[in-house]
Amino acid sequence: MKDFKKKEGHKVALIIPEYNNDQYNIDLEPYADLPEGSKRCFICYEKRMDEAYAYAEQNGFAYFATAMTISRQKNSQILNAIGEKLSTRYPKTKYFHSDFKKNKGIDIAKAMRDEYGLYQQTYCGCKYTFLKKK
Ligand code: SF4
Image 1 (cartoon, rainbow, N blue to C red):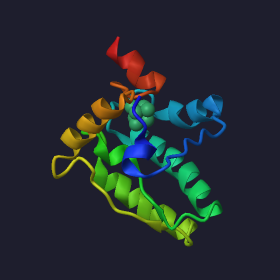
Image 2 (image 1 turned 135 degrees about the horizontal axis):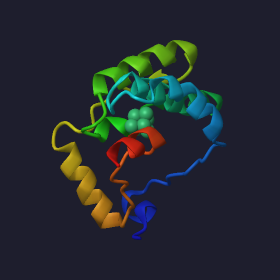
Image 3 (image 1 turned 120 degrees about the vertical axis):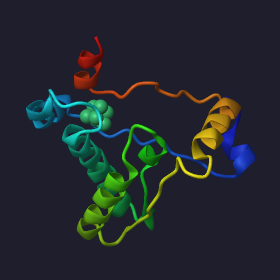
Image 4 (image 1 turned 180 degrees about the horizontal axis):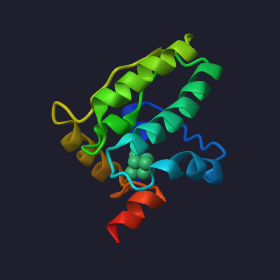
């Protein structure tokens, strides 16, 4: 992998919080039969964004955004509405509206992925979507 910091001048920290898969499944199980892009996913978006937003506020970040808006399978309007809602819970960190797939965002992201040798997951991660595709 090429050195992102050397070329772009930015250091990107990867923070991996504790993950409670049992609680995640308890929260999503009532929506197990719904398809991808449904209420199940909106709950999933909010759970993930809430944890990340809390971290951003606790660690003095000026802005919070989500990279999920790069995905064609993710509803950017819903993601931004969730971000706005969470911004009232974490008022020290502003929400940054995005729709990273616009303006050739997907092509730019793919080019950067290839340039830096980054991993790109080609599926969404919960067991519900995986089981439905079988
Ligand atoms: S992991 Fe993906 S498919 Fe599963 S609930 Fe979350 S957003 Fe939806």
